[in-house]
Amino acid sequence: MNRKITRRSLFAVGGILASGIVGGSLAKQQSVANQTVQPAESSSGVPAPMPERVLGKTGIPLPILGLGGAGQTPLSWEGQEAQARAIIEAALNLGIRYFDTAASYGPSEDYLGRALPTNRKNLFIASKTSARDRDGAWRDLERSLKRLKADYLDSWQLHHVSFASELDEIFGKNGAIRAVEEAKQQKLIRFSGITGHHDPAVIAEGLRRYPFDTTLVSLNAADPHHPNPFAPTVLPVAQEKKVGVIAMKIPAYGRILKPNALNMQQAMGYVLSLAGVQGCVIAAETVEQLEQNVQVARGYQPLNSTEMNAIAQLTAPIWQETTFFRAWH
Image (tube, rainbow, N blue to C red; front, side):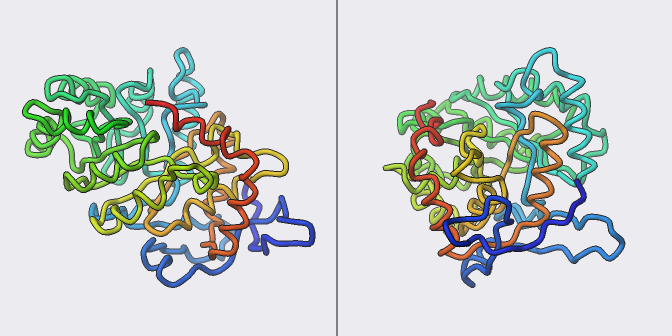
């Protein structure tokens, strides 16, 4: 797992090298917007740490890869605590500091609460509520704090907001935004956020209507082929508002990682090279898979537009199956 990833060209006669790490130089404005801090090469043989970026107006620098707490991972499966703990402990040892979970992710919060160290000042724990009303959101927050064995959350997010009517409910007289503001005043949460994978216009409107600190949205190399893509709708608004952007669904539950499509270097490299994205969360089924993902993140180099377009073109034949989550709401 400590094998050094070298920077190679993506392009070769007949197509993209399946084994090559994505590389190249990014346009100046993208490099500045993403605020990537590349780690120095280690001279001791110890792998270099992951690059870090400042998560928008939170001002918090974090590694570009965080651990997802749902999907194809023992973190959200009942009866898999030993496997989940092994992944969480490996994540800590590998330098991951951003942990993503939610009130609705099965035992995920419980597993994290029992596996993460009690001293969490260097960690960034984000959870979510699916409630749209104040009282329901408060119940979720109280339960999340108890499960996570935490005095506060670094980020508390409104989960999978999909329709304009939900925004009206959230921002209504007894909407969930009241719980967000009250929790922030009581220092039970540091930052607030909104997440979604259904309609980018709804997330963009949410960012316009309220000064959220972060947003978690679905972004992968197949996004440009969708008739209603997230990147051009959400990212400009997030940049304007200085909202920290975390990407999800990068490998699309593994569906984007297949022969004649993409490898993880390409999938992760594409998303992290989008202007305005500060990081991504990817779940892991095993410790080995997690180690491979961290290795890719450590070797990340920004892509230029030509390289990004070439990667996106490889997903054209499979864009529908790799954006399946867009139907969720």
